[in-house]
Image 1 (cartoon, helix red, strand yellow):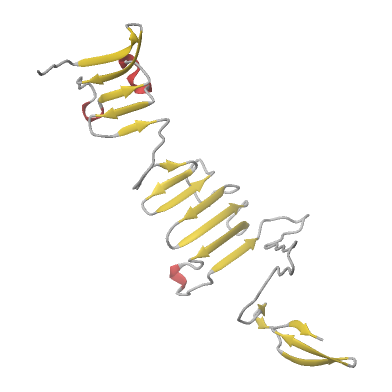
Image 2 (cartoon, one colour):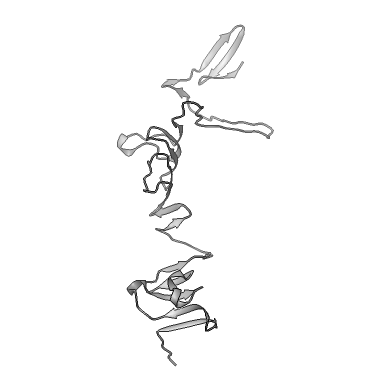
Length: 206
């Protein structure tokens, strides 16, 4: 048969109701229809609840399977369409002085620590590294340390390789080295009585 009621609550006894099904429409599409972990009087604090519009709130969810999320948050990262972004700025300003900002998208990955102005930044990125308005393709990746730091050293990149049979911290497969707009020299040079082989400004053989 058909049983109908505006509200059905369950629990170990009358004083300890911890789940409910409700047919009461008191908040339109936001009315709580199912709840667990709380009684109906505290429905908005129930750790699990389903609203009239189909929205589900699950504070302690353990979900396995396919998830298609186009909004919300994962930890500190906000989901915005096809990208994730996080900022310590209270105003959601990616350039707010002395804030941090991160972006992960299909086009690029960016991590930035802002100084007191936009010219003082510490950042690393891969993918799109030039503004589209410049018309330049840009590099595949970049690392900067331009923080205003008059009393200490700024280091942009630090590499380390050890504990192997051979240890190579930097392996350049192809391409020139350019410093301040000038390319490294390639050729043979005599130093004293030794013939030195230089490639792209780096001594490779003596």
